[in-house]
Amino acid sequence: MTGDASGLFGELFVDREMASAMSDRVLLHGMLGFQAMLASALEAEAVAPEGTAEVVIRQCDPDLYDIAELGRAATLAGNPAIPLVKAMTARVAAVSPDHAKWVHYGATSQDVIDSGYVHVIGCGLKVVDHRLDRLTHALRALLEPHRTTPMIGRTFLQQAVPITFGMKVALWLAPLLESRHVLRDILAAPVVQLAGAAGTLAALGDDGDRVQARFVALTQGADPSQIPWHGQRHRIARLAAELGILTGNLGKIARDVGLMAQTEIGELAEPEAPGKGGSSAMPHKRNPVLCTLILAAAQRTPGLVATMLAALPHEHERALGGWHAEWPTLPELFRSAGSALAQAITLIEGLQVFPERMRANIDLTHGLVMSERVSLALAAALGKAEAHHLLEQASRASVASGRHLRDLLAEDATVSARLSPAELDALFDPATYRGASDAIIDRIIAAYETEREFMSGHA
Image (cartoon, rainbow, N blue to C red):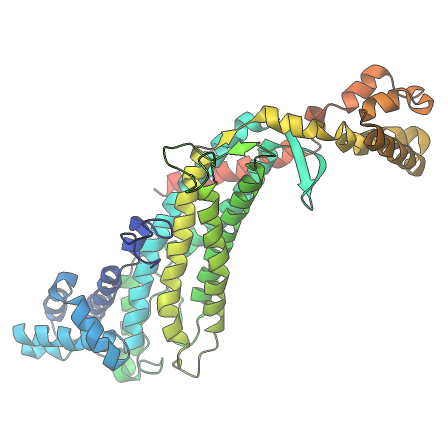
């Protein structure tokens, strides 16, 4: 269901671009790419005769193979590499029998499948990186006009003290920059796989190390210091965890927006579009469907990450099930993260912000949310304990009477003796109670600009 963007659920859980990146054809392309590089490495190191690479590479076109037929054979064989090698060897033999023996020479099925998935991962990460670029740009654009827009900060779902909407957006942005950095590093240095039956390349004898080094060199950007990872799955588990973290942070944005879009709050709203967010029963409804879908992805990914972590303890030199559990799980993680990113881009690029509602919600408690500030201002003259007690008493009186806290304090002789009416008014202005917000925002903007500068230099 969720792996198909053309079914009954459309693109609610996976979009066509990411579905394509995670497709069987892309995996097959990567598996055939492994065979092409292996043949090239064998010939370059004079293990295979001249002309081997050319003959093999001509049979590495995915269109030459029937994916459904390979799948039927994989059901019996236990993995798709075995029928692919058989079919490819037959095709090479039909053209040049002398070169057929060098197909898959010295390699094992896991080399083929792992390298195929490295190709799939690369395709998926390119989509993720492009979307993160667009999303972080949208958040940066949203941040600046609202740097000083006051809104209420909430802790335990209760009103706390004023913050700015710009500060909230900046804190949405920061972890996405971190995830982009981590995922970009993984994309920049793929870890390919050529290790042979038990990780030693014993079938290649003394030529094993040279062939492996050449194979790695043929893979642009591959990590030259890699070790065989048949049973060492930490890198792929780390990738899965980062995709989970990314999706969870997108869920955080969606959770905040969804709560702020509640009818009683009304500070934000999702982009408007005909037919979007409607109800089959209630014509007036405007449901936060983008937030819903992002949160659905964020709630699904922890289980997928847990599967990847559970698969880490492989048995000896080849796993008994753990490796196989990775095959459907990692693409599903990409599909889920990719869908959440696509929905988040639409959400943030069209997000409606209502500053007047933010200010009205600050004023709901008749000034109580500014009590901390006034208490601190009085503490210098009265002492912290006495100032806190005074504000506590005044706050109770405000709740009981429904009067504004500022008016009650203005009538208190202890307060009026130490704070003028103008000073008291200033203390109750939430727009000026920003603390280190500007400095924090500036640091996050600097991190964003550094990221953009780096990417433009490596485009």
